[in-house]
Length: 195
Image (tube, rainbow, N blue to C red):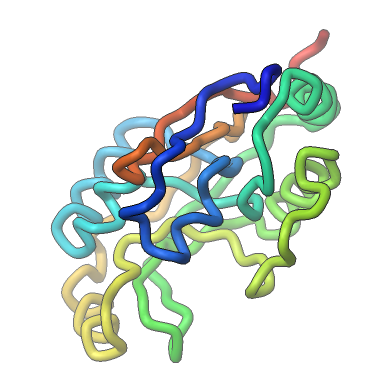
């Protein structure tokens, strides 16, 4: 571990799948408040337990960090977050990205979330990070590791399962996985926080 890292990182990734290794140092994401977090978590547990076991309900923002988060990196991110105002996030209805399989909750406003993501990814902690594989599109995943057929069936089965709504986005969480590839919150950035 880097001497000034703000947290510890797993050293043993021998049992991780190849794609999981890119997430060793974690990423920044938004955790929805209760009761939405639990409501979406129950759906994830029922229809994609593999994803739910790794990380509860969330909105992914950044690409994975290419290296450890140092105290200097964190201070820079705190300064960036302090200059960004909290904003309202709307969620729902159900959506998908077919032909890529999966069921998600639509998330808006995309422009504000993209601006937040770009501001955070401009920090030096992301220097050297691989480019994003797909264009940014904020969403909250319900089922990811499913087929196209399962996606279509779930869109019908889950219609109306989560009523559209909104919550205030006031924070961004730094999440990183343990040896079992279970993500936990390591730190939290407050949007618009002075100091």
